[in-house]
Image (cartoon, rainbow, N blue to C red; front, side, top):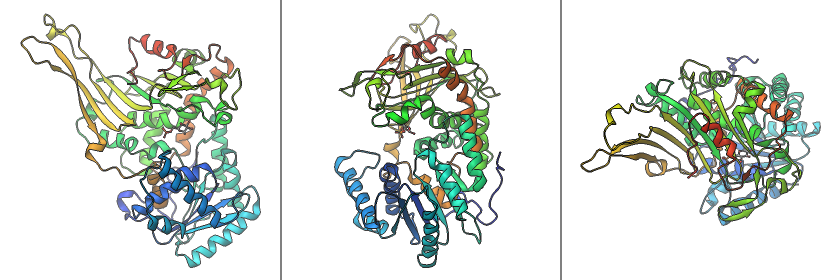
Length: 524
Ligand code: BG6
């Protein structure tokens, strides 16, 4: 296990509160510069950082890829993509127009090296190139390496950077590496990847990305819990009956059949994204906003998930795969008919799981998680269900039954927080109605255009790793889901497909809660 405290002596991490609005100068190198991720998310996020005046004059963007031959080609392909986003309004980047001054600012700072990142030569060329930029462009000698490459190359690129002596920090100049998802495919491969990259890098240099942590509303879970005196005293087994976490998607697997066949909904979403929501909801208060203080508490809560036995895995976890159906008025085909998917595929596109957190705060409070492709609505929420008030007082009135209080943290699409409670209906008799106090983000705050990557990239530049996964966080996530992965692998599903695209998921997911006398909140 890496030393969590190994803060670099020459590049102390700063917290956001301590840093100025403008990031320190650096050269950011993107491996996989011609790829989808660079185009769809990284470049638009950098552009948004430029318009928000967060990038310094000494910022430089270096693309590395095999495909394109020159910086002019790279710029042109990125410009086309940005214009296409504006024209089609499709994708994570939303803008009415591209500000030509801001875009030029970024384009003027781009350089490009054509080469294969599996071959050593490119690293020698890149080292020379960066040394040149450090001398002439005011990068401060700081280098951020962004691995927008297929996951099988993560350790290859890191090892090559080490061999080329490109990641040693000295004279106050930092070297950081951003690693995308998926970080491993199971516990063994995640551990192996951690072990491999930690041969070259120190933990503080590694920024393991989980883009859910870039979402404002996900970060807001901590603010809600710890910046308000009202909620935290209720946030425990004494007051909470159970918690439901839903991440419903209206997309199918689209062109990702090959990846998805080997991955499935459990691995794709749960140990990473859904566990981020779970750990922020259930963690103990950290002693500060220091990256390690927060990540310690997040790791603890995931480590406290009750280990699942093979028998419980089959009972408490439900898998589903979509059949043909209708999504948002459009007819879609079954998962098994998608490109690159086996005709008899047993890969799940939906998972629901009832888990227990074995600690003082949560003992006996079930957490129900569900996520799936092609569900009725794109809907991510955390729903906290409080204990029912005693009925005694209402005996003998027209009130036949009382509804419990819910607190709903809506993460997407209509970000906000709602508190549901009972109120007396006006009139001479005592009857109750359910009402909701609803806070919508957009009615209070001006939300700047955001792909979710802006904060994350900015944080890498300022050296704040709070929103990134540490090795132990990643491994704890995989450790918790591994028994389900294993149980499902040894007993492939026989009832697939078992939910229609455009529905709430399989009937077995409803039964999972019905067994406990509960029901999922509808995907309205
Ligand atoms: C990705 C998964 O990590 O997250 C996708 O690989 C999933 O399958 C996506 O669709 C969900 O993210 P978002 O931001 O669209 O909710």
